[in-house]
Amino acid sequence: MPIGVRIRDLRKVYVSSPPSAAQASGSSLIGTPGPRGTSKAEVVALGGISLDIEAGEIFGLLGPNGAGKSTTVGILTTRVRPTAGRAWIGDHDVWEDQVAVRRLIGVVPQRPNLDFALTAREILTFHGAYFGLSSAAREARATALLEEFRIADRADQMVRGFSGGMMQRLSIARALMHDPTVLFLDEPSAGLDPQTRLLLWDIVRDYNRQGKTIVITTHNMEEADALCHRVAILDHGRVIALGTPAALKASIPGGYLLRLRFAKHTPDLLARLQALPGVREVRPQDTTGAHIYADRGGSLIPEVASLAVAGGAELLDVHISEPSLENLFLHHTGRSLRD
Ligand SMILES: Nc1ncnc2c1ncn2[C@@H]1O[C@H](COP(=O)(O)OP(=O)(O)O)[C@@H](O)[C@H]1O
Ligand SMILES: [Mg+2]
Image (cartoon, rainbow, N blue to C red; front, side, top):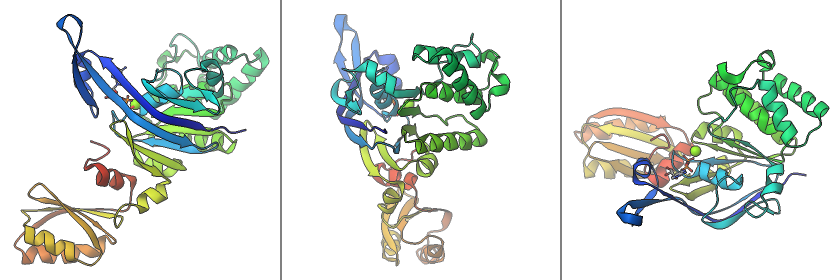
C-alpha cells in the first residue's frame, strides 16, 4: 500500500565555522560568538516548513542552490537531525523510528556514494543482503535492475571506471533493490545527458505506477513540470509556492513574461506599457530593463516597439517566455532559478 510523508514546522540550523559558512548561498547567516573567541556562524537551512506529500504521488521539491532541498531530504531519510519540528514516513517518526523508516525508503543521494572497489552487481547484491533479501532473491533482482538500467554489459566490472551517468543509474538501481515504498531522489538528473534524463523519467514514472511515492528534488523547472504531480517551490528554507505545475503556472499574473531592454526607459514609457491591453504588471529592472507580465506574448511586441519609438527609447532586446515555473519563481523572488 502506498504511504505518504508528513512534515511539520521543520527547522534546521547548521552551526559551522565561518569559512564554509561564508560560501553558503541563499541562506541566512547569524554570527554568534564561539568558544575562545572564535566566531561561529549559524546557517538557517530550513526556516520551518510543513508539507503533506500524498501516498502514491510524484512530489517535487524545486528550488535554487542552497534553498534547503538536500537538508529536507536528509531529515526525511534519517541522515540529518532536525533542529525543531517533526516528520513522518507513513506513521513512523523519522527521528524516533529510524530502523522502520529506513526499511520503507530508498535514497539516491545528490552525490553518488558508491564503493569504487566493487562491481556493479556486488553493489546491488550487498545492498540486498543488508536489507535481508535471500541470496536467490537478490541475484534475481540485481539482474533485472542491471538490465532495466542498461548496465548489464558492465555488471561485473568495477565501478571505478564508470561514467557519471552510469554511476547515477547504478545509484538509483541500488536504491530500488529492497523495493522501497517511498523513493527519494536528490537532484538525480544533474549532470545527466538528455537521453539518460529521459530514461530516468521513464523509470520514475514506472516505479510510481507500481503505487510508490516519489520525492524528487531539482533546480530544473522543466523536470519538475514534466515529472511531478505536485511541486513545492523552496527558497531560503521556506515553501514559497505549492501545487500542481498547471495550477502554479496559472497563478502567475497573465502567464506570459516579456523581458525587454531599452536604450533607457522613462516613467512615461512604463506607464504606457502598463496601459496596453493584456498587460497585467510592469516591473522595471534597473534603468534599461523591464519585465512585463501579460495575457499574451508575441502580439504585444509591435505595440511595445511603437511605444518605444514614440517615447524616444530604442527597444534593444526582447525575450518572451510562456507560462513556466521559472516565471513563477522570478515573480515571487525577483531572481532566476538558475542564478
Ligand atoms: N553540513 C552543513 N553544514 C553547514 N551548512 C550546511 C550544511 N549542509 C547544508 N548547509 C547549508 O544549508 C543551506 C541549505 O543547503 P542544502 O539543503 O544543501 O540546499 P539545496 O540542496 O537546496 O542546494 C545552504 O546554505 C548550505 O550551505
Ligand atoms: Mg542539494
